Length: 113
Length: 114
Image 1: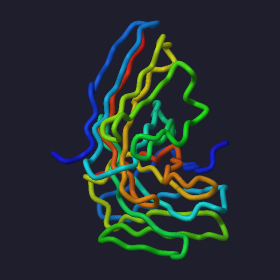
Image 2 (image 1 turned 135 degrees about the horizontal axis):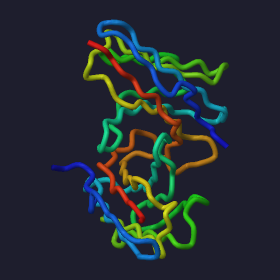
Image 3 (image 1 turned 90 degrees about the vertical axis):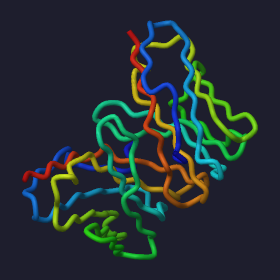
């Protein structure tokens, strides 16, 4: 499968714990995006990487959130001291062209108890 | 500030009829528009797109229309099939951002009845 891969697909955690999600983009795609989607809403942009450089962060990305893309390949999104409001689907997408479709993974669903 | 809006949360149509999904945007600098389809527990999948230099793009049963003066786009599905039942998101890119990020609407749930 050469699509965007995300792991884990589901994560249940207790409030205050840290969680990390991993995204493996399509191999030749140098652009990588993280989005968050809550029930009844569309995906909301969190952050963007071009190769290993994080070039844009949404104000939604509080200081408890950190994302990395070492070596410009896979990316990780870490949430520290999780809160119940962090419960959402976290989507990763990649693309090759600056203006074109984004290819999404199946998402990582986070439930914070 | 919702820059892309889908004002109809749901739509129900009969199999074989036309489905029309609507989307409005506020940022006149957007220059590329897309429609995505999403099934439960899956990520969004790309359906069709249109550049701001065009007013129509067609791909099989799917046609997207863009009215720049009204800042409005629509997706037509003809004929509708039960497998089209999903959540549809419109998205836009461009404006002040040069990252290629997409701004999504809230989605419209389409149900196609057999």
